[in-house]
Image (cartoon, rainbow, N blue to C red; front, side):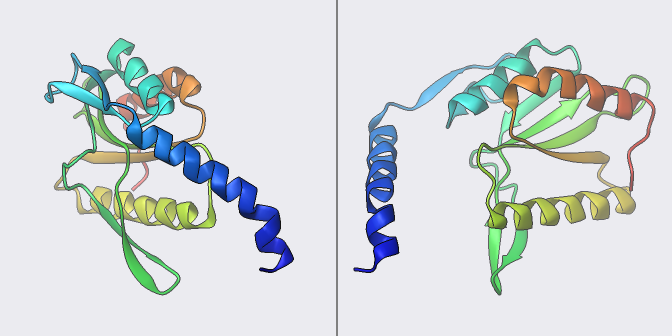
Length: 166
């Protein structure tokens, strides 16, 4: 075994142990009032925080955890095509205009592959907005779910002013 593998072995074991412990935990979910789905599936405490802000925000009309909804965006990574499944789809009130659909990703650590996903989602939103037949869309990856309350207000302001870039 080379020196690099030996140096990372304890970290890999710790990560594997945490993943196994998380998998052994019962599925966390709670009833959502602004979702047509009876319960919100929570994969992480950050997604829990996001759902909490969705429920409290007057700017959120509805939301759904993108769990088994088949909403996926294809992207290329290292010469292969992959599926990106964002965390949430959120309907943002835009006042007198048509509501805007926000694709929200809640992510802690960002890797190079995540940037490829984000670029694909940004291109997808731009293409759908230019098409014009599916309403207006936004994409936002957040690393700070506790700041989501303020971000939702900003998205509402953008949508109300119809300042979405195609």
